[in-house]
Amino acid sequence: MAGDVDGYTYGVHGGYTDDGSAYTSYFTLTTDLANKEALSIYKRLLAIYVYVRNEGNGSLNILTKRDNETAWQSQGSISLSGDEDILRVRLAVDVRARHFLIRGSSTDKFSFLGMEFEFEPAGDR
Image (cartoon, rainbow, N blue to C red; front, side):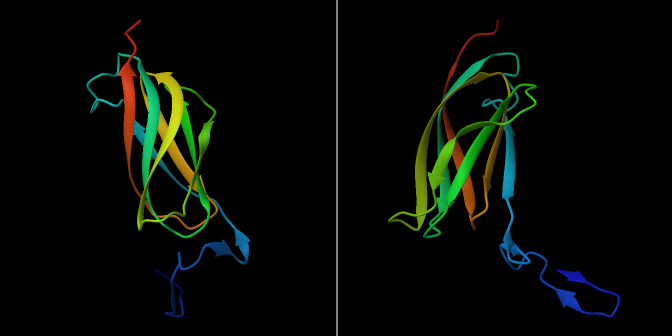
């Protein structure tokens, strides 16, 4: 909610367009895949299981950054439609790092619920 000097209030995030133009919504997660206990060890991320609500249409893009990388790397896109109310979508990836930033972004409406990760330790060199 937001208000102005005249006392009127408005729903700031009441829509998914900005004056008719779609905008990109996103979230960013940070993890070392071991509750901050394995920052010195490389891990190979093999799959990301994404949990989202079924929106009936649209897609959610998944991007990653490794360690101190400056640019986002696309890992693929998942559909926001399916047969169930809550969708669990497996996204196969192959990313090696000590620490990961994981971003979900879309110009469509989405309700992100969570993620699970499939990974292997890859050494500490």
